[in-house]
Image (cartoon, rainbow, N blue to C red; front, side, top):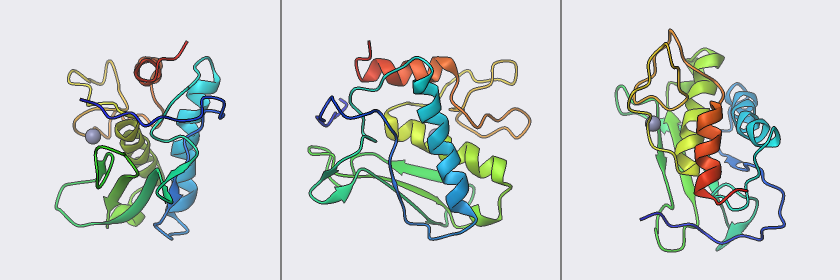
Length: 163
Ligand SMILES: [Zn+2]
């Protein structure tokens, strides 16, 4: 069962995060990926509650993005409500240690994908190049997206009772 934190519903919907990569190459691309989600909502969706909403619990930011993951073949990982699932103080997105060497389009796709997980999306099981998704189980360089599809933005919106 999903743990949804409660937020002030008057806050403007916005994905916020703490960029802990301290990497001048990664930071602007991470910003673009977050902006892609925010832009999706500004074009018709309103996020009332979000893991990624502005605010802190126990003095911690809700999304922390860091790099340094070294498991072979893993581009990024998202741990929702880390370390406790009951109060959901923090979601951690950890990117591969190789992330600084990726083309910026790949990095943006991976960060936007992980933000999708942070917001509550699972993988799209039937993603194909004829129907590209930001949330495929495996990144396909031939048809990767750097922004959420309308369906994906709608799916997140429905998790948070948008309307
Ligand atoms: Zn994933």
